[in-house]
Length: 447
Image 1 (cartoon, rainbow, N blue to C red):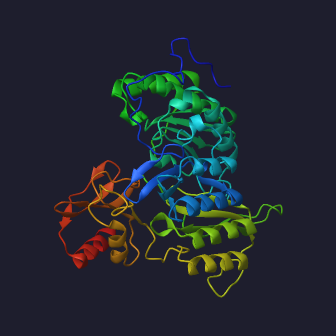
Image 2: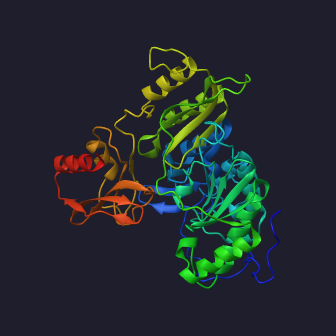
Image 3: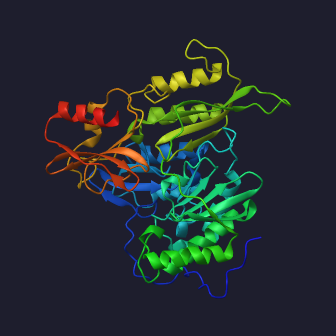
């Protein structure tokens, strides 16, 4: 059982408490929009990236009625609606609330939860129970309403994929009914019953709020070293025994294509079945026709879409056992679905030149961007690279990935290209005003 909060630990910050951070969190949401150069922007939190087909329809309806009609995926598996009319008022929130996408006005920006997108589909444990319970607990906690829009929970199925994303509080599934709880980037994690995981994650977030009250930190990594150490100890006093387990350095996206797992419907079988299909979205930008096709595909099979933190989408099946097809030996239903999605411009296999290519919104959508990096990324697309590449229009590098990647940042001096590995950055190359040289330099760096 999860231990009670020790007497020495402070009470969580109340929803009405004050802090040096009050009024300073500029993260947009559904109720508070961000003014961008292409209109207002709404960020809709999708905990775990899990959407029903009906809720996906509602998002498209809001984008079409109030915005530019497109849907933009974020690095946390959320959805951004851009180009909203400044006079739209509460219209988007009203429609999203009616669809169940806004269960708590006080907590709408605090519902930042990423989850392993292949959990329960590739033989790894499901984290769906954790996701539902944690979201409910967050929305039911008056203290959690004070979490910033930057604070992040992660639910990892044991592969380390979302554990590597640098969340503030992470639950990691283990075989045998236990789980591990990580606070920030601490190498020391705490083992506890899987049933106690969501409540322990919420308690860790509430303890963070108390720790951050005097420092003004938005996230665990922003705390002073001594305060962060004390926070980890306080969480440990309420959880289970400590275990040494460093955070993975590389966050690996699901490979585009079919997702398979052993078929357990027949005892002692070794047959695989296609449990889902995975697609990538070039630059995370979906036109209405693409979104409709994804939604229709989901409705035809498992009625669910999982938006990934790598700007992709997993559609659970089942799609049936692998079989032969003219396309690539995938099961007939999976091949048919992937063929249609590929024809719509989505990434359905590792041979797509768009695999691993990402970019911020850039100019003209963002006033701070020094260039139209999306157009530049498209012009520089070449052979598939070993490493992902991310293009940023300014030094803020909004939405950049984690782990290892090629970082392309536009500066007044030119495009700065560097190889990032965790906290390490290799020597930088600057390319000035030469598209061909830029494409060549990026391709060489990715290789």
